[in-house]
Amino acid sequence: MTSSGSWRIARTVAPAAVLLALALAAASIRAEPPVDGVCAGLDRYTAKSYATEKGLGRRCALLEEVSRGGQLDLPSLREKILDELSNRFAVEMDFDGAVALPGRAVDYLLENMPETAALVSRYTGKEYHATQSGSVPGPTSFFVTNTTSFAADFVYLVSRETPTASEHVFFESGQARVLLWRIWGNSFVHYKLQKNGDENARYDITVHVFTSSRLLRTVLSSGLFRYFANRMFRGILGDIESAVTAFVDDPKPVEHLPPYFVTGLKSRLENEPAAPPPGR
Image 1: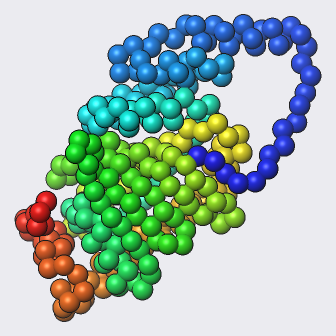
Image 2: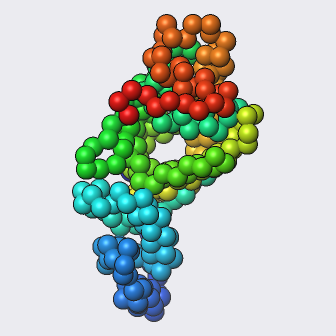
Image 3: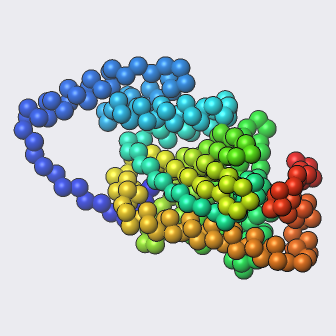
């Protein structure tokens, strides 16, 4: 992931003894951490002069998590992820809050992204588009955009759903405009949903970014960026909540949306079993 703009770095001169100590420490960091099993591919990170034990631990924990989904058996996807994890800097961003919809309805909307985009576009007047696909062999993925502030591909790495909670890990590639910043690249999105009956659900989202850009690391770590990123996310979530409210009040939603989607969403909102859509 990169960011537009310039970045100046102030340089200082350190005593020779300090430089020697830093060099010896870096060498020992690269040599010591054992990497085997699932994390064997992280040797491309440990071979770097900037590798640290803390950085290895963070990357290994994430790699073990995403490997549980079984999607990394696809060599091209595994190589892309290992390359991403070999970048120097790691940033985590957390977003949490409540959504005014039953958790089972949120699950259904996520499972049917093209129809959900059509729902939001229809009832909010804003342009949302989405496509969903599943390669054989390979994991399910979808592309979504609001045509103004973001556009991204999401690949499912891990998915777990129960009546009380849902959890997904995505590998995301895309771009976004947040206030004065335009950023693009890749990230890992760890999404958790706690279902609280018929009234609402609570989400907890952690975004993991690995980058070689000091500027991007600084931007993503700033409180101002995170404030406006959260506000942008809340705006999208608000569009979804408003669209579902209008959908419930619409006496003839089948005139605008596929009948199977209308039936499925209504059943989730009313806590009834939903039939799978045609061809899925």
